[in-house]
Amino acid sequence: MRKMLSRRFLIVLGVALTAGAALATNYSLWVNGRTGGGVAGNYADFTYWGPAGTAAGVNKKAVNWDGYNHISDQNYLVRNALDCYCTGTNWCYVAAHSAGDLMIGYSLAMYGGSTRYKKNASPGPDGACANTDGSTQTGWNIKWVDVAAGAGGGSELANAGDWALSEPLVSDLKTGTARALYDHNNTRAKMFYMWAGAKGTLYSFVLPGQDDEAVAYHSSGAISGSGGGSYCNPSDWFCNDLTLGTANAEGGAAKWANHTVVFRDDAEAYNHYTNGNWQGTVGLVRADMVNYAK
Image 1 (cartoon, rainbow, N blue to C red):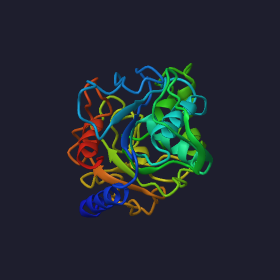
Image 2: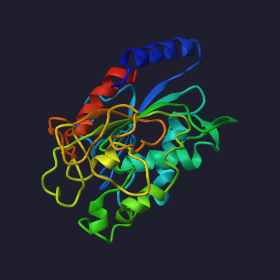
Image 3: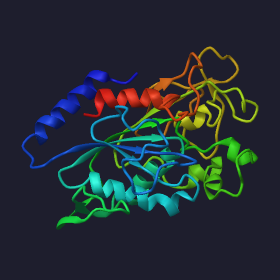
């Protein structure tokens, strides 16, 4: 289980260390998954998630991308948000859902070591921000990443054609493609906290092990490797257990580096979908952001 006391201590320590920094601000960035819904560049549009007035972490911002095109083609929108709110004296907490896991993972692995201009956190209509003083930094100031129903390992629904094959994103979500899209172990030392749902019924014959109707535990539980495997709750005797924390799953499969499972849906109570009201495992992540993203 997550060491809550340690996390609280780190947050308090971070606040203390930055208390004297001029205009230092923390932000909570929410990165959507497939289907999108919010207007790109409008950080106040929470259409994908639910009512915009719902608490979801300090200074919450919706990092909207179309949820349709390739991760590589849409990633500039996420980088714009990270540049705006996570450079200079500002720091970010990041929450992601489903294919948003691929988005933030891709951002960090591919661009997290790049030179970034420090921005003023005042976005224009396109979601981009202006430079502050022309100075730069390496990567972004990110405290940690919360992931609900992560699709970093892809989904067998994409493999089997259960989603529209005309969507470029669906080709990225094939299990082999998603796992080869970038180095999932290279999080730039940022910890990914994973919430895995198991209320899967509709597509259980396609998705191996426990699933939330869209992604199986091998993905939402951050199991490494080139292909998906079958992982379950301890009550299921017919496949290996998805372990909590960073420990290898039953059977020996390792999780990606800096990924830890903080919620495994033993009661099979949470599915994949937000239902326009912060539901499913997103609701659990929202509560975590409210409690810890300060």
